[in-house]
Image (cartoon, rainbow, N blue to C red; front, side, top):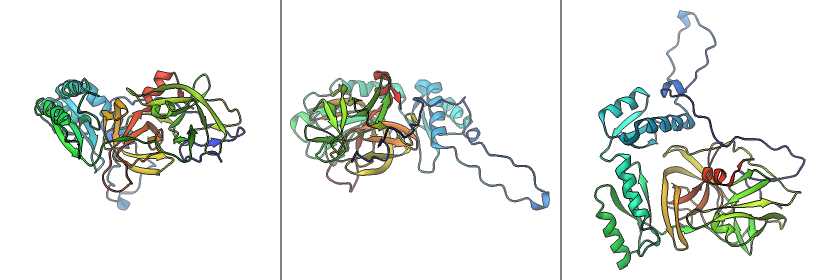
Length: 366
């Protein structure tokens, strides 16, 4: 049978497809309170008055829109934002004036030492060293929670070359922190079901459409073989584009007219704020959940370095490569890799942003 992926399934030609939009429209600049619309159904007598209900919290999408607006407006006076466990938008700021603007918009300001410019400068310096001696198995990116560029060093990576690289990173000062993690990230490719080529298995992230329909998956998958099938042996199509390393995405043009594909509940593409709840769907582990840790991560796989990735703490395993990262109806990314060895304990997982792929290939969500 064709793969029954909850987020992206094969359907017969007589079924109806759902049309979707590529980008969500951002609302005008509003306070957090104004982002929640409460219906009014009339009045009640004063004698029947009840205590006012607590106002509903803005949705994660609304908070992400507010985050985008505030960080754009504040420029160098901000250092990223995130949604905390209570569902509040927290914006890192470096000045009292910026803090006042954040408060006025209904979000929570958090005063930090480093603004966006010095953090970006430190990450750029590290990115220039990606793939050099001592970086294999390491990853790094701006962490909005610690207000620093965190360099993840796996246990056991204590060779002289790694030690020399870590020394260079520490020399960048307070903008860089070194963090030891359990294991090095690996590309998630393994044998089994889903979309298959040359005896290898990967997963589907989304279906794009342009001059035809395209399966979107990971580039380290499409580098393996040009012709792909379903787990039931039905022809899917041939590789149209493949990028790895640097990026990690590939597209497979659907050439089998007997297969009709859809994105099910995915209706738009976006980048929810750090701290947002997400799920990952793949052909090995199915659906796993977590939160967004951050964006623009650089990961140094054994097979090559990839930049611009999304980091989460959802579990991924071999065979999940190419699978879907999503939040509600928003498609976010394509599974690239992560720590492997079972779904117990703390995880790091990395995803290629989907918006980059669709825009670069001239596609929209089907």
